[in-house]
Length: 121
Image (cartoon, rainbow, N blue to C red; front, side, top):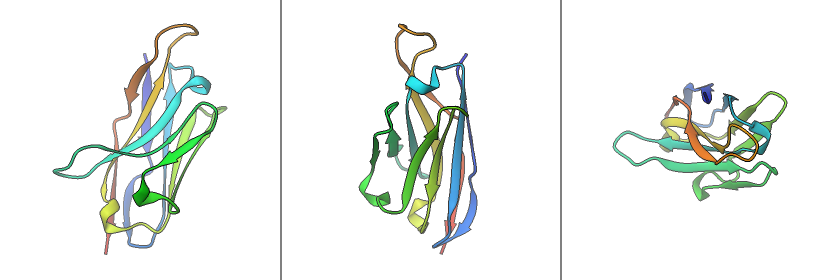
């Protein structure tokens, strides 16, 4: 059974920082592509940042230069360092893993439970 546990959200003032963490179990983490998504009230879920198993990263334009995604394969954890936060970053942030349970098996998407980030002006 795959489990992703998101943590690190909270309330912060504009200009502040937060670091989100997502710890995975039940998946071959080192071979999984990981990502952070967010969903604001009344809006669709959107991609924030991704990191491949090889360490290649990608960011949505609105967070480039402010957010950094990274991973620690030994800890089976992916991070999202968020700096210079803005009120428009307010959302529930979800971790996603695309990977397999066993070598050679099919890859599927798995989601964390989400962690709430609130940025006040």
